[in-house]
Length: 429
Image (cartoon, rainbow, N blue to C red; front, side, top):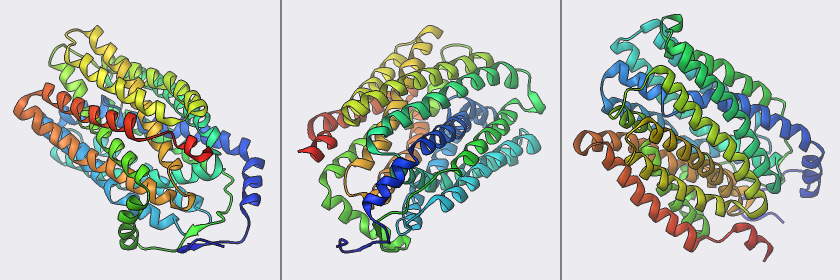
């Protein structure tokens, strides 16, 4: 019998499991292709190098750099719950996921065209900030939908493999493009605006990922939630946290750990106060960040399949704290390179662990809501973080941003290590 508040579509769990196993190879290939192309484009946009430097060149203001990233994250704060309400009642979610993905990619195209058509003007700057905000809006939807879809088509003991290789392939291709972009697109000012032409390339590449996702074979869910509007989904969140204290603690850990995002737009700006950084060096630093995240994601995925994502979260939080310390005491380009190596290793694994742990901490039919509330917290931090970081940099200097991040991430590490057991062990006890 279905649990209260649930709908039970035709079809059994056994039939769904058989369907998933039958199409597993195809869905793994689809996930890998989607990750390789889709993440490549979005990493070029979200890298802590190209867009922050471009925005600073347009505005000359660290506050505006922080504001732009904050508005991008603001678009993601409320839309995870909207995403959950759009898919929570659907036995299949692929079609609506593709529509949200197409609208998100359209914003990257508009960012590129704003730079190419409006140039280094106030109108161009504010157009880019607007489309960054809209991109965040659709990113909030996509985060819930893609994670929920992956939970349906990839069994839990294969998710580490799939996530690790998705990130590996995306990181490798992004690293090559980053080096090429820094050394060629930007320094040679391709199409009259090297940064805008880079963002146009990002749009084209990430669109290939959406095409790949369309080939997914999705089973119909045997249990779904009743159809809820956004207000009803919001009202369900406190009860979700109250009924699932393990997830509630993880919610706190992921939120506090994500305060590291507050510092990300300022890493390269802080380094620039200590040394001259050319377009080619931007490409090199972005490549280091990508390659280390790429290689380590295979390690994190393999470790997670063997021992679970809890240990991955603990290690990567520790590395992120260490990375901030490295940057604080770096005075030459070698130190900055070491920083980007460590932070690339840490942030990729932290993101991988956060996205996958949330899928394991509770009932399957609540996955969209759990993903929504967890992403909402991360995105709320992403909203206030860069703006707060800009204010801290203005008043106290860049170093103060990193000390605040260290303190908050230390709290997250203590909670994760002391109060959250490995969920897979709980399932087998």
